[in-house]
Each structure stands twice: as C-alpha cells, then as structure tokens.
Length: 188
Image (cartoon, rainbow, N blue to C red; front, side):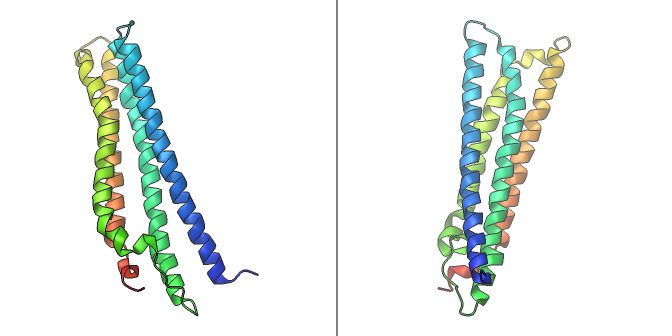
C-alpha cells in the first residue's frame, strides 16, 4: 500500500511531466502556425498572386491563440497545485519533506513576472502580427462585394478575439504568480 507521501510525490511528478508536455505541445503549435503562415505567404505572393488567401491567417491565428493560451493557463494551474497544495502537504508530513521546489522557489519568483510578460509579448508578435498584416494587405476588401467583404470582417473579429484570448491568458498567469504562496522560497 502506498503512503500519502508517496502518492503526493507521484502527483508532483505527474504534474511536472504534464507541464513539460504542454510546453512542448504549445511550442509545436507555434511552429505549425509559423509553417502555415510561410506556406500561405508563398502561395499568396508567389506565382498565383492571390493575396486574398491570406485572409485565412486570422482564423488560423484564432485557433492558435486558443490552443496556446489553454496550454499556458493549465501550466499555471498545475504549477499552482504543486506550489500550494502539494507544497503544504509536504511540509505537514511527519517527518516533514519540506525540500526546495521549483514552483515556489525564490529563483522562480525572481523571474516569473518578466518571463510571463516576454512570453505574452512573443505570442502577440508571432500570432497577431501576421494576422494584422494579412488584413492590411487585403484592406481593399472592406468594401468589396460579398463574400470577400464578409471574410475580411470575420478576419478582423478573429484578430480581436485572438488578442483578447492572449491577454486573458496573460492576466490569468500573472494572477496565479501574484497570488502564489511563495513561502517555499526561504524554508530550506
């Protein structure tokens, strides 16, 4: 029969492994997005000379924003679980297993806010700039006949939703870090 301590250690390992997996999946999604953007730019600006195909970029950006942001928030939740719930549990074990943990360490606290800001800025740059450029290249379709005008306006809506989703993810992660029990930073 497993002890409560062993169960908690296994939970910590599983949570940390899921965080690492989600980091990889998030980064793979961003690479997929960049590859899709490169392909669409090649088609649009190549021999076909059809910039209208770029209007699909805001839709892809919206999907990418949702997936990337979902991974970011779940990683923050898992980190919070490790730092708060498991951290307290380890402290209260008899004998205590209050060892340094990354999730509530002084080292992590010292760079977490800056890291979150840079990550959000990079997501805005990588995801939203191509979307914005696609809309600007096709700005003439604001007054085009149906369906190009509708597609352009849908692209604008996707761009706005993408920005809001990235911003909400940033705010959620920032709140987790601000409200975290950083008591693990000086208990060892």
